[in-house]
Amino acid sequence: MKPTHIEHLGIAVKSLEESIPYYESLLGIKCYSVEEVKDQRVKTAFFLVGATKIELLESTDPEGPIGKFLEKKGEGIHHIAFAVDSATEALAEAEASGLMLIDKVARKGAEGMNIGFLHPKSTHGVLIEFCSK
Ligand code: ZN
Image (tube, rainbow, N blue to C red; front, side, top):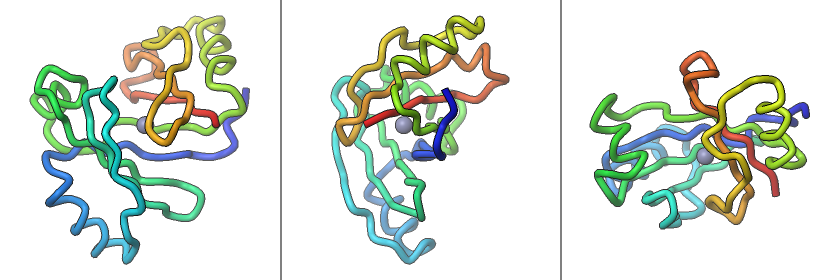
């Protein structure tokens, strides 16, 4: 399953309150949505840059995935999300080709998207997300 484009880049930040004005000023674009994703223990903020979004991720729980990432690595790029027709099918294809998955089946992410992650141990260190509408 070929991705159609990079849907978004996920960037871990300590504080949305500080980062949103920074990105608004850097990009000259307003943040169009702030949303809490309880399942992932994050608050997200989105910017649209062409066909690709920037997703800022603030942790709501130090034990959550972004909380742990910030603790280990500090702020920075967290994942790349590729837009595909079906996240579930893309995950199944990745698994069939021998890649390790974090999510065997797609789940609901921010903006109501179906999302699933590949395991960075089998993707040369980059956390890769597939997402579909
Ligand atoms: Zn994402």
